[in-house]
Length: 145
Figure 1 (spheres, one colour):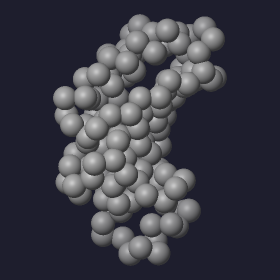
Figure 2: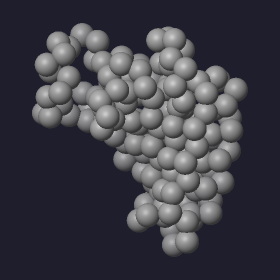
Figure 3: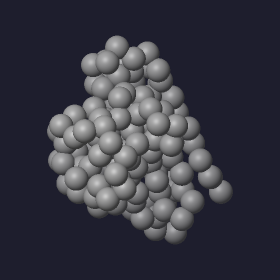
């Protein structure tokens, strides 16, 4: 039984394809239904492309992190290290409101780049990372075991 697969790559568009291929291979092995794999491939590509773009926009050389887990459901987390307000698309909010726990998932997924993800992934969350620098796009699909 697989638990977690982690992939880190330099923020270059050429590596997004690799992340998509790995994500689909891991999903297939985890037991995600075949008919969900195209949407899954697109969603992982979109989340990784978004992270790469944010890193490039801010001149960051930090690695983009992708974590895939099949514990219960198939979960993919794509983590960037861009400023939180940029990663969440909330540059118009004052800094004290960025930590407001009443921000809804809907408010956090209305930024550019999230519209396509929201259409592809039923269970989508976008949150600041625990360490305080960057955002995490968390996507979940059912496993058909």
